Amino acid sequence: MKNTIKALAILAICGFAGTASAQNTASANGYAAGNIIAPVSVRPNENGGGINFGSFVAGSGTVTESGNHITNYSNSQMSPGSNQGSPADASFTVSGQANYSVNLSTAVLGGLPAGLTLSALTVTPGTNPVGLGAGGSVNVTIGGTLTDDGSYTTPGAFNAANAFSLTAAYN
Image (cartoon, rainbow, N blue to C red):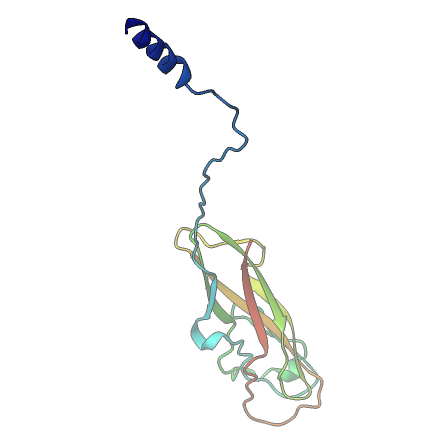
């Protein structure tokens, strides 16, 4: 009986110990992370985001709103003297993630009466990239040049609702 118990004990120790084998697969878990930032937005400020060239006398030449509320006439005959109306540069607020920067671009879209063309859009601040600062926004002004080829002589106000665009994109 003693031998049987010893044999069973030896068998239990050796027989049930199992064998080690190499693994043929392995896995590990990874994580996903990111940082969601505020979307970029562009909204017009005063005067609805438009360039107002004020009053001018019809004739061949240009009227330039320089982007800092200064109006110049290439032809002195176009100047209405002290009756300039309310010339103003366009004003926008560009917003997004604080302390990020954006690139600004403009495009002339047209829509002006025949004989008038818009060109030479100037953006202030004018150097890309433009920082949004700690508050996450920056004020942008836009001026431009309005050319009258001499064929537009109709007195009265005109308004080209979509004459130009301002685009901001994260840098």
